[in-house]
Length: 155
Image 1 (tube, rainbow, N blue to C red):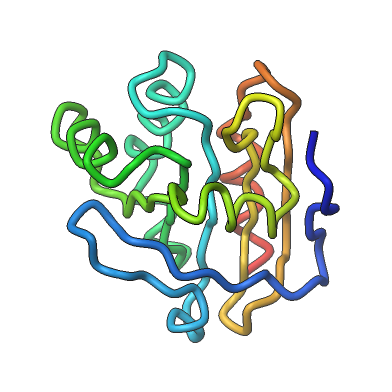
Image 2: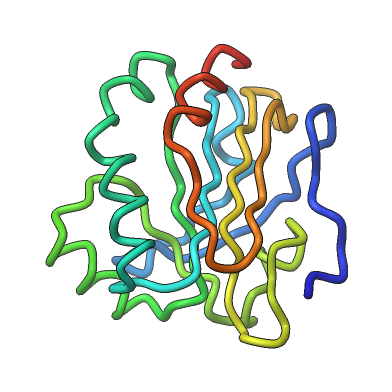
């Protein structure tokens, strides 16, 4: 299980630089000035992850109205994320934490060493880089979209 505790409300969000589905680096620190939902998920193409991200996709208007950008992160390689994004039509940024394997997930305390993937963790980061809300679910437990939408009031 995770070795590092997950950041909670009031903690600085750990910085990371990860490639998107085009291989372009995305650095969290470069996004200061806008709120970001860092949304860790285990695997592209899995049923629960597809369903969760599909719910986020269907609610993009609410996130955008609150000024929140979504960075969905998994340990899948860039090519798998690109294929998944194309097959599902996701408009959110999908980032690969493939190498060094799970480094961002480890920094957020959501890397599962036993299985080599990220747990379902969500971290709402304000424009100053401070975590305002977070939730980490145990293995196999899906997240509640409504709690994410209620958290938008925190930024």
